[in-house]
Each structure stands twice: as structure tokens, then as C-alpha cells.
Length: 105
Image (cartoon, rainbow, N blue to C red):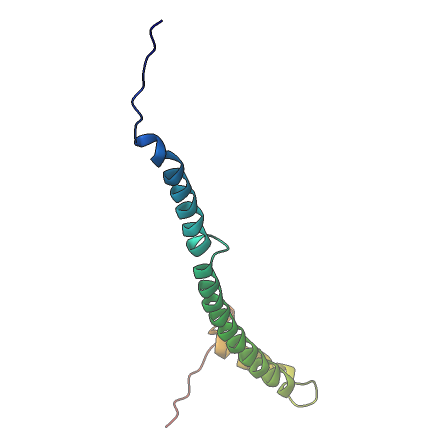
């Protein structure tokens, strides 16, 4: 009876370590650069700092506007004067109005 002898190849020994290495490299890369990785934490902290700075600026602007609105209460300013100031600030006039500009001299 004839038997075949197979020569042992070294490539079979490298398949499992290669697959394991690729598996670890894939998950290692995504653990650092993925959506929930280490690097994304730093990007998220940067975005939080920028958003907090914008929020602080908006809160300061809102407080300023609320203060200006509080100064214009019903007892301190006439409605005609308020209308005139608003038209001047917005640069608006009706068709039947005459505008006379007086110099600051």
C-alpha cells in the first residue's frame, strides 16, 4: 500500500497569529480613533469648551438686552418718542412722512 507523505509547511503556523494581529489592530485603531474612542473624548471636550464660550457670550448679550428693555418701561418713555427712536434705529419711514435732518453742529 502506497502512502503519501505531506511536507509540513510553515505558512499554516502563521495564519492564526496573523488573524489575531489583524483583529487586535482593527479594534485597537477604533478604540483610539472611533466614535467612542480616546481621541474623540478630546475632540468632545474641545467642542464643549467652544459651546460654553458661545453660551457665555449669549447670556451676557441677553442680560444686556434685558437691562435695556427694563429701562424702557411704561412710565419713563412716551410711545411717540419710542416710535421715533425705533424708526431712527431701523432707518424706516412711511410714505406720507416728511423727514427733516438736523445737523449736530
